[in-house]
Image (cartoon, rainbow, N blue to C red; front, side):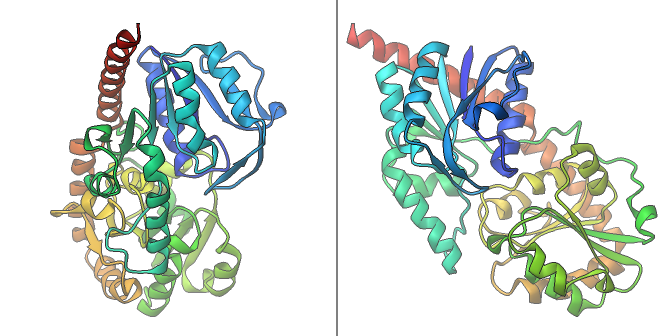
Length: 382
């Protein structure tokens, strides 16, 4: 089938990874994919590709939201009319265009599926999580006009249903990870750093990720010279945090790493992966670490606690994260056998529930269901 995928290619964030992994997997299974995304025309490669790109004009875009230009809806409508896809799948980029998509696709009689990404804290314990809950309230009336909405966990599904979206329109299809690419293996990381134990954080350096709680706990725990905390990623808080928490504390700032194989090598060489977020959806970075057999500690923000429940990792409360980590970091430093056991359990959980292959199979089944419903609907109009 031909899927018109409306997603994100820059700046780098979880939505970018999700769009890349899913569209590549769909191409591998023989589907035709056209990739529509916010970009200037000169930024789109003219090299022939099995996944042709269509630029949508914009005024501003960030890792969190995008402001389209006034002609973006017209450009999108014309592109879809020319492409004639079987369906449209929008990996929502948090832009005003999201609210116009149902009307555009209704006019063109195209089925419309959305993946809704915004992070959340299921217990709404702080200002950040309350703000994210408002995002769900804002989007719910519009998502009800999509043919189907994909979320990553039952918690998100229940929330959207409570906000008025019919239950039969919401599908729970968790993020998936390529468990062949992300797998345990040899790494030179420890030798390069000259240490015995490596703890790692990978993600944005932003308020909602709560990285400072991890850094504060690391400093207070006094982890010794044979351990390093590796921070992979960038974001608005990075300059300020780097100036306070540096190499003298055993903290290595690696910045954003575009090369995927290099990120895999870092995970394979790490003992413990830590995700201290205040709000989350379902972290791909967490799933990648689990697939690499790394022991994982994560807060119960979003669906991450659900992922690690029942022994697949250590689940932290989003309250007093630094205090919890100050106790746990030395424990994981002193007991390597604990990280080995949890790493095996994390890998097995990823294999059992969060493989990209299973994710794509579920997605294909949903596509066929939506197309059947569309055929029935179209027949009633004849």
